[in-house]
Amino acid sequence: MTERIRVLLVDDHGLFRSGIKSLLKRSDEFEVVGEAADGLEGAKRAKQLAPDVVLLDLHMPGVGGQDALKLILEDVPNTHVLMLTVSEDSEDLLTTLRSGATGYLLKNIEAETLIDAIRMASRGEPVISPLMMGKLLANRTPGGASASSPTVADTELDKLTPREREILGCIAKGQSNKQIARNLEVAESTVKIHVQSVLKKLHLSSRVQAAVFAVERGFAAQ
Image 1 (cartoon, rainbow, N blue to C red):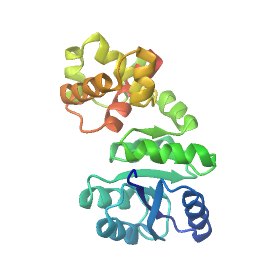
Image 2 (tube, rainbow, N blue to C red; image 1 turned 30 degrees about the vertical axis):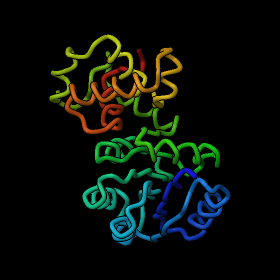
Image 3 (cartoon, rainbow, N blue to C red; image 1 turned 90 degrees about the vertical axis):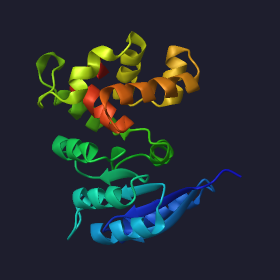
């Protein structure tokens, strides 16, 4: 039997947590290992339980999602944090992704989409709400340049092969390894090798960082 995806729910609304818990209990694929009603308790529970995925609300009384995210990733770096929020603010999106969140979804998401997102997040694949991806694209400066200062990754872009640049564009569009493999007609194992090479060459530590970097520089539009 395949190991279950262990999920921690962190949200100050008990009714919302109950709904998500009931949804996940319908499948043997998931196990809700714990709940928390605020960011500080969520960070403590994450440290104790080391879940595969944390569903984390952004705006909560006391310690909010942004601070909780940093605490969780400091203590449990292998846990994937999926922000689940009502905030449509592009700055909230960018801040959480730059801080290491694996994804950013809005609470009006369809149940099956959430299930798929948790699966992707458990594999470390970035998941961003289509609406928020649109805002991320709109946040770029004209001509595809980043609004932020050049980074080490910018100086290393020329080291990417044409295939690696193509895959970086696919990552920017939020595609999984399986989707990239299908679209490019290559083996999924080949895609994984290319992704690791892209991260190494750009001195980035995760697909999420690569996705944000690529979107800000216009790769999603290519």
